Length: 246
Length: 323
Image (cartoon, rainbow over all chains, first blue to last red; front, side, top):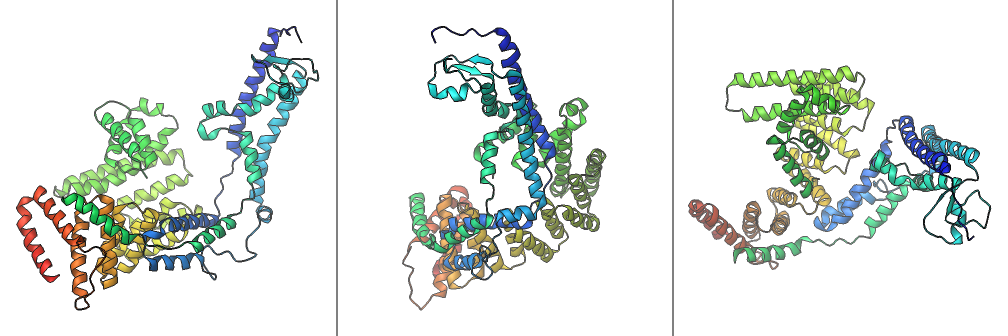
């Protein structure tokens, strides 16, 4: 298209800026609501202990060469023997997370709360944007883009003749939804940033199984070769002292 | 763990605050964040803020955190002050205790009024009881707190401290063992346990704890040194050989600056020689480690305490003869 579209300044004042402000306010509101809804959950004793066991086993693996062979073997047996080792997970006892979720209503409740705080405002704002601002060309970005960006920037406008650098209001909404993370981390503090993309990742990563962690750690311990590092230290100490004395 | 940069930053801030340069609140925040123990300073500067109603209200909700921090610092200071005043008259001490107790009560009351149901305040009150020396009441208060939240590490540790303060070392060991069963990656607890074991002369158990500490922080020379000490105390040719190795690792890690490790090497070598007499088993790994350690010690003595040099050389002659 040869001629440029002229955007009414009223569009800037009544569409672009309100939309942005509303998105920011909703983000902040959602942060506080989700903070309010967060239930004080007491961690499960087993999970706390498993976490600590893993840390200690990792320490053992990393520092194995610093303790005498006898001590190392005793510890390895303590962690990974087949009868009652701390890292040993009896077969069939590894609860799958799905079952765990259903057995613990609190967990399902928590998930639901998280989902609700994410989905409800999103659908509402989307409906709102659709209702009031559908079909607007809300902004123009100052550089040209290729045709591939059309679906990203001109959602809701089905005209192939409009230049790609024009942004539709619905697309502006999506850009805000995903792009305000940096702003939120400024306003709400670093770790409080509400990030939808991260949320989604968490959802995908759900169903993480702590017992897998244990058995992985056990395998790591089993294959480790103990090679006491201390005898070497005598020579090194000698070298240090020689330098010191001379 | 406090890193070096954080420490220098903290010291700079402390210096600034001490000289009236402002930034007291930042300093207190930093102390809280790094969990360092500077109770005297915290008490002094925290009280200055708390007594100034304008400054206090400007903190907003953080005011209550400050109350808690100052209360804990005051409790800590009581014991520190008592230790410092050791030689002074009894009555000064009592006065001090009285003042601090009042202050504590004030802090606890203010918090109690604000958060009547809070567990954190409950914990603080139990600690006040403990600081006042009413062991019985404190002992009752802690388990009820644990019922609400069985994973409150501070309460667990307070219980251990309480048992230790009453002189009930075996009780403290039991509690610590129970705590470590769950929180087994807490190396400070392992260290405490090791020290209690040593004071009860249970060296084998202490050695286990020190191994655990070395595992969690393999580059801290103090753990190597303590482990070597324990092994040397246990005795036996095998333990002595191991002890010598750990003394040498301490030397390596400290760059030969640790006098205790140098002495340890000398003592270990002579003890080993005594035990393996007749077996004619020479130490092939490091034949001149002992002579080097002695030379290093001699140099150290010459530099730092030349008047003690004669004592040192005569003392070492007897060692040499036996080896």
